[in-house]
Image (tube, rainbow, N blue to C red; front, side, top):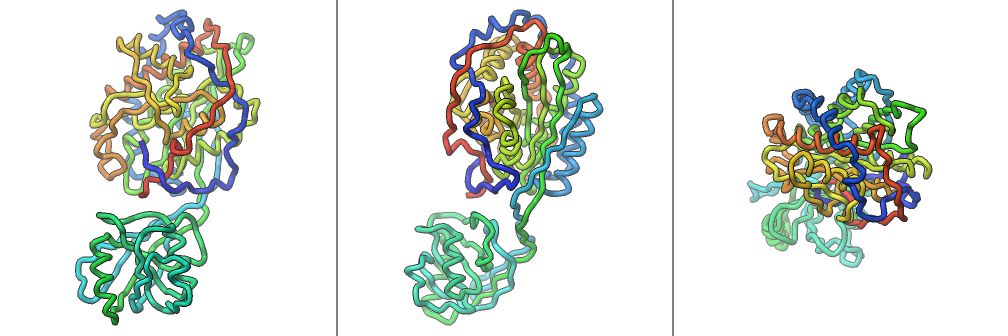
Length: 462
């Protein structure tokens, strides 16, 4: 779903991955859990996809980048909607180290009129004029004894990280750095984290870098490197949590079912599908369930900073005690559930194995659509931290993703009401099949299983 590279630290706490929370040991006899499939109509008949569509319309007016006023506006909107349904709603704040990309980057070299530099995450601002010098791969060994004072180091990608290259050049006296690719195409990436030793750094493609290096070998080449508007520092994001206690407290079961999505988007993308569609679906399901009797606690959550490495869901799970984690029966995650240009719906579990969330959902889709929604292995969304804590979880997404993924074209006109309704019906009836007052609930548990590192979702930077 998303491409991994750099995770940003959550200052508020680390994931409690060792909590012995409940997880279901083997495929349940799901049909036996659903004793009254006719109850589906209580959810299906009350869903109004126009509500979902209008939520997307509001949320996708601007990008909702984590830690920005636009994300805060989305948080306020979600909170107001939950409260209008009568839910007790909590705003859970957390902090992270964020980065604002530069508003302007320039590289001027005599004889090169069409250079197309790119920036690195965590690069610093600067306006540098200096002689260009070759610095190989920028390793400590290559730069040992070299005086780069006031110069701009031209470095090839490879061997060590971008951040190490910049630090090594800086410690040798360089005022700026240019890193060029060692493979075809342009280069963008990250320095990994903030560091006071960084100097301004830009990137070039392989062809541009090699052409520049050939000229620099002859000596006497100067350059002007300019970066403006970059900013790194602590940011604040929020999760929004609405809770519905069991309707009849005397018959309430000891457990909670969670439904969620992320409300943030990437820079420059209105995020109608990613993930205003999921957030809007959570809001509509919350509206529907407000008047339906349930014997199990329901929680509706929208997470912040998912696009920066699942930071909101990580923080939420990290705040759960072992007892609270054990109470969670399952988490239903909705991420990118409305694009008319994406493929068919699939259910993703981190390890590809069935659990109560996937099984109830497959049973629902079979009742509603005639066939169970396919189960596939997949991480990179907010169901991952729950899985790592031993909590059954699954994510709903249409695959392959649409061509507009993470672009300014992820807009309202690309949204399919039919797909939105289908996902809401499947999730809503799956939840209700377990939470309706006559259901006996599952009983088998086993020890949680650790997630694979590659299933972590991180920021989409190569």
